Length: 116
Length: 113
Image 1 (spheres, rainbow over the protein chains, first blue to last red):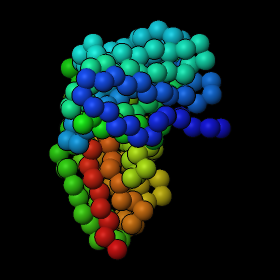
Image 2 (tube, rainbow over the protein chains, first blue to last red):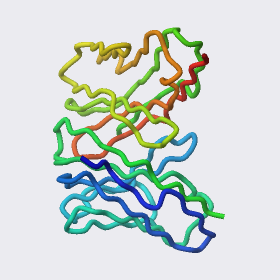
Image 3 (cartoon, rainbow over the protein chains, first blue to last red):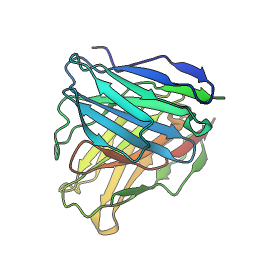
Image 4 (tube, rainbow over the protein chains, first blue to last red):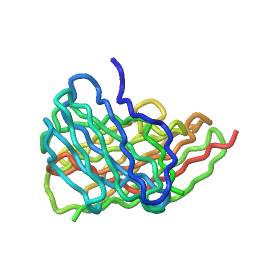
């Protein structure tokens, strides 16, 4: 069974540009979450999608957005990039994503975004 | 509010030594789940263990063991007889209602041969 696939693996952008990251979850998984990882900050939750609907959202500005398609694949978009957006962006999927279950997250290898 | 604290930023041990990674969590929810993930240099977080708030039974799996104590809100992770392949960043995480995980800042473990 294929794992969570994230593309591209690396991205270099300049300030003010926008970027789109892609995530294909494990087959059959309906929940996709996005996390931002920076040194010293750990993983910060961006948002979660379930059945094409955003279900949870973290404390990030509106420049960060996402969507999920009918096949559960998800994209994350960051507009008007800032230097501080440089980070590893991790996507994670789970089957159900229901509350109070013992679901665990399956992670991709991430997209390393560098903003110059 | 939920919070996970991993006070140890970096740890170095010599191969075959035992090492314990600390994790302290905060939540007012009575039902919650605790996790440990390992992140090797490749970047992908690998699931290690999951514990729910009603199960304080400690667990041993090979060289890994976990000590969950609700009284101190801690969920510590011990590697016995460490190996070079254990070198990675380890994250403790908390999940309450909903599918949002709260991660600690991670502990970078280096095992020196």
